[in-house]
Amino acid sequence: MEGTFRLQRQTSRWARFAQVTVRAVAAAESGVRVGPDVAADDQSGRAEACDGAWYALSRLPADARGIVVSVVAIVTAPADTGPGDVKFAAAHAVWAALGRQPAQLPWLGEDGNPVFP
Image (spheres, rainbow, N blue to C red):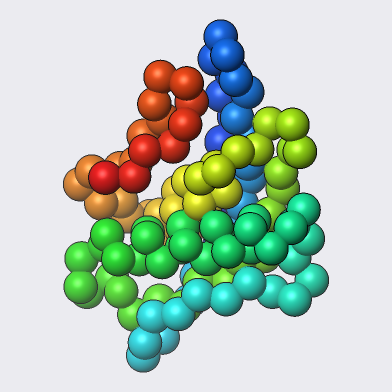
């Protein structure tokens, strides 16, 4: 299963952008990995993608947690991608791939900043 999510928001003060694509497969134990050929501007983008995927998996019911997520693409914009943007996009990409969402989703604050409950 594959899922992509694009965070794209313009506020009066900031622009926010990140796009993440993941593949999810059933497995005995949950896991997250980033492919070696996944381009990201820096290591923080790769780390945020992993954090977002783990966040998404941890918010699902126990019967949906035997999933291995592979991050296959990360797209950022140097001027418009801020802290938490890739994590937010990765979490939503996982939920899109699985066709399931938790009861409470993360949201974007007034300035477009990601908020994780």
